[in-house]
Structures are given as C-alpha cells and as structure tokens.
Image (cartoon, rainbow, N blue to C red; front, top):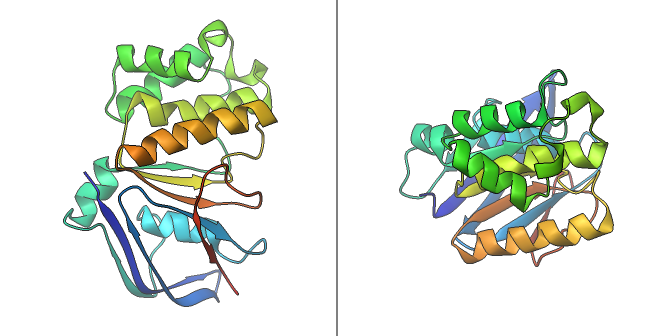
Length: 200
C-alpha cells in the first residue's frame, strides 16, 4: 500500500519545450493535492509522469517504502481527462474489463456499478451514454479495484452538481482510509486539498 508520494525537484519536457522544473511535493496518507495552472502548463504531464508514462528530465519520484515499479503496477489509478472507454462495448463489458484488468472481479464490478448508479445502464453500449454517465463509468474502476493513490485529470468536468458532491464523499472516504489523491483541476475539488500551481 502506498503511504506517501514524494516529488523531488522534477522536471518534464514535452515536444521540445520545458513544461516545468524544480517541482517538489510531498503527500502523506490521507492527503489530497489539487494541481492548478493554465492549459498547457503541464498538469496532465505531471500526472502521467507520476504514473510512469512520461519520462523525467530531472528529479525523482518516490512512493514511500513501495518500489516504483510495484507502485505503478498495482498501487495507483490514473483517470485521464479522456475516459478511455470502448464505445462499442456495453457498460457491463467495459466495467468488467477494467475491473479485472485492475485486479478486481465480477463482484467488485457490480459493487462499483451500484456505487456509481450504473446498474440501470449495464446493457447499454458506451456510445449511448451521456458525458456524465461515461465519466461515472470511468470513475467506477476506483471502487471496483481499490488502490491507494488516485491520479485524477479533471475528474469533475462532465459531472452535474449532485454527482460532484457524491464523488466528493467518495474522495473523503478514500482519504479517511489512508488513500492519497493528486488531481489536476480547473474547478475546486469538493474536499479540503492542498494546492500546487504548475507554471506559476
């Protein structure tokens, strides 16, 4: 279980230009941090760097006592700004795929469907879902296969006010259980969180 996230003097370069350098952050279990900054400042790249999908130009990323490969292989979830869903699959098929791929099973997929109010949509193709419903489907993997560190890219953007509040409760529950959250946002998170401005 990841109990800490430490970014030490990290720098990321994309497309031949430096996005940021010298960036440091320490998060402990039960803490959340909201990444803010202009479009293109590097918020998404930072999340992807923590997940191991973008190389660092400089600095180090640590996960407390957990080795980086182990942390990235089974200790974190990255929910991107794009939902990453297959439109031709049914909601049930997509949720089952992501649940099993992330370490859950059929029972945990059903529990996630209930938690995100997706049970009435399970036989619909993903392409027929609204933007908010697709976002809830993407977020369901957080419940279907619990992991310590949530990396969230604009998690609230397609959700209505009621679902923003409900997801805020889910985030609070995750933190209360010792989880960590690093989220790129334009709108404030519905939970207490530290702020880190990228490109300030």
